[in-house]
Image (cartoon, rainbow over all chains, first blue to last red; front, side, top):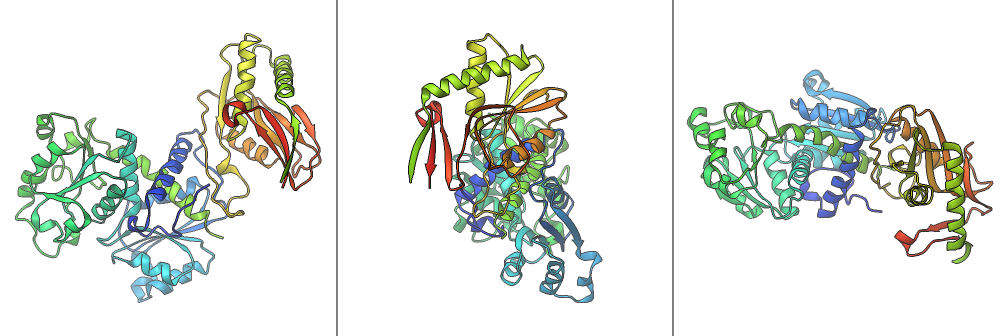
Length: 308
Length: 179
């Protein structure tokens, strides 16, 4: 019998390889559950979960909410735009108010890096980080690795390139941690201005030529350019970005092997990937979304079983 | 810790054949019957019975599945350890079928309660029966009784009934273990 080494999911950085394996094995069982005619299990019927989103989200919020409901947890939702945060309430006060309504677990997205870690030290609830600024997005990295494992059999030894805006991407950082932990080789590719200066300390290589990166890899994870996080110009025009770092069918057809295309969404069609690539057989973008529910069920189940 | 042999390999062999015959008596050609082994330990018994029905009584194509009840258990968070799940494999339709749930030991009845809920997720069976190798008397927490039982055993609460299978544990035997 094994269990997670952590009581919160704050980032991949705090997990070990065994944790990831346990999450994947548990997700396998939940994936079978969500493909039944009745997709719900009663496990978490005495657990209440608050989804607190201080930043916009469609996919992640829906995916978490669905995962919670499939486990029969009671769910309350909270968006910062409609709340007392606007009236000047602090994060700890907001969360403690919610917790005094007997909430056991908090799923939080926040624009500030480290918000989840801060909260886990000050409130009595299990915290799941659903994205904290440009820091980490652990469930996304888990579902990405899980999707690679499903498609290619294993993550260890695979070559994965993360293409795009690495600097502003929590998905990139969490993916790098998760992939390295499982023994994959990782490169990042994008405009030099969008690659963090000390990225090599994470054990990843930088490749500024997209074609070379694609020649090398088994999997390309295409990230969105996060215009909303850019206070200055990092590249001349979107058109120029697309010409250098956008993937289209022609580029893929010229490679001597069929690589797997991933994207965490939302896609800017025609910018980082063209529609024919996004909708092609090589793309596992929609599998990622399906796996997201199973992975989040596994994470919530494993964390909830540690609540006493 | 001391242990005493409740059933030897030979006795298990005889009991399995008797249980197979009892199933046969009620289900004849098994055309509308499915066997479901409860994970993790019920699957060995289910596989053995299927094998006997197939090889000794010529019943081919018996539908055999395995059902994991972890997510339906009523003791989630009540113990120290995380409950670890096992695979569920039911690749046939349960709707309007006669379902025989199969487990090695019937003790409090809570696992069977969970299995009864779990099987509903796959459809509405015509009827559900229960087969267990060992029935521990006077220890039920719920009003659940087996339709087919291998051996009835009186065991007190600090005793454990351990069922061993050749293919998994190296021998066929049932032990009563005093903890």
